[in-house]
Image (tube, rainbow, N blue to C red; front, side, top):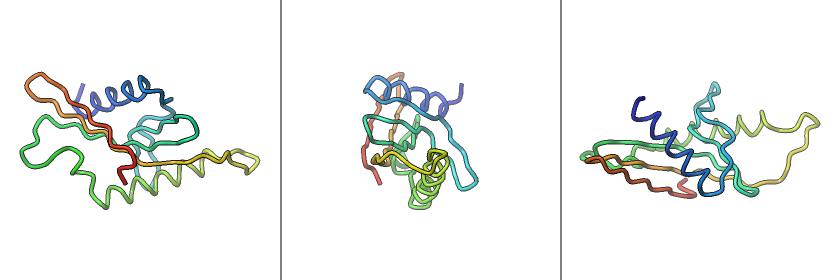
Length: 118
């Protein structure tokens, strides 16, 4: 399994352990992709996962650029529109954008969950 796919699986397990229900993994639409879409209470969370085995150039979270954020936000808009009820009504829930960074070094793993990252 590739490092990125492993990191997304690890992040999904982490979220479930912390009370989230994972609704989608690797949601794709014409404007972008979202690694994980999860729900906790009435908050819909769009999660970008960054996994690295080397951080000499930058921490994993630093690779979530402004352009990447815009694409995730557009994909989130698409998901929200797609998941609206057929009768045109929507439950009122909040949403946020989180980043989970996973760093794997010397056979040790560190995970950091940044809520409301952007």
